Image 1 (cartoon, helix red, strand yellow):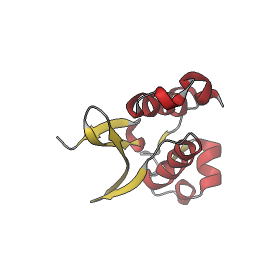
Image 2: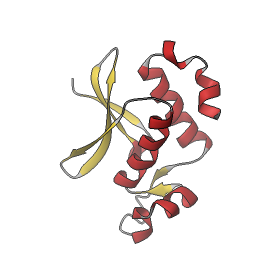
Image 3: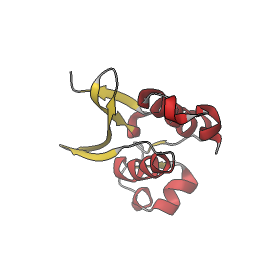
Image 4: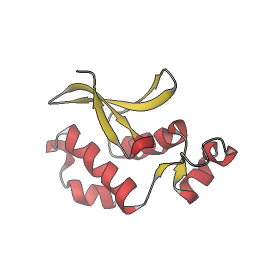
Length: 111
């Protein structure tokens, strides 16, 4: 609901802005981040632990983000890369773009 409040009438808000707001709330406000220090801990794969501890591996963080985005009507796809998992989305300015949720929600583009 907090994200909805920041977006207002989301039908007129560009996808890139929606993605930015979701990332700000989840990373800056709630503290979700990649667990690089204890990457292989089995808790990084258990969604209840990831939500409670707000840390995890790329796949578990992508699942959390994609669930939040789905509730907001933001089309995101979990995308497997060699050795990593990111969220894919269509950005109005960049075309196909990817969000690396493990590394603070950094947005990557193909170009």
